Image 1 (tube, one colour):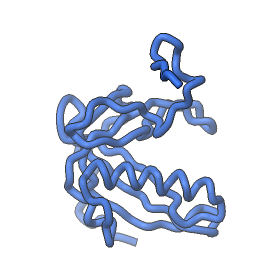
Image 2: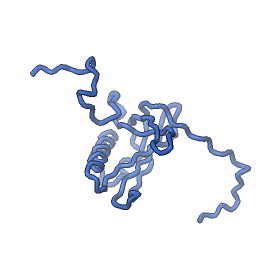
Image 3: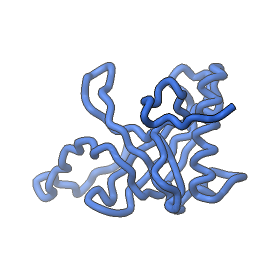
Image 4: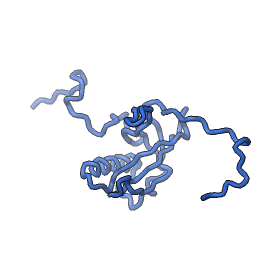
Length: 157
């Protein structure tokens, strides 16, 4: 328990509800990182806290959870690929500790999706790039069949 001695809610404006921010690319930094156990208790994930640094949504917080220790090999592979993208975006390709990724600017691609359990809209980080890179798709890879024909490049064989 924590003492709240002296706090009076009548003297403080209540926090406003935070609606999801619009999908798009935002400059951000990682402000915090923490290893936490999975809900099932069978592994751990790295939770990264991102704070938007510019524009209308400056100061807003988003989170990414990377399942780096999980019995599901696919979950680990996805998390490692996402961590690789983050490391490359901030220019730290071999960090010894997650704190080495803190306070370094990068671009995050934010998506808006509907929660399965409640139907509420929520934000999700769908991609990472350095500030100098051009816009990158939210997904790490996109198969040729998902690309519209007019956007495909032909390759002579």
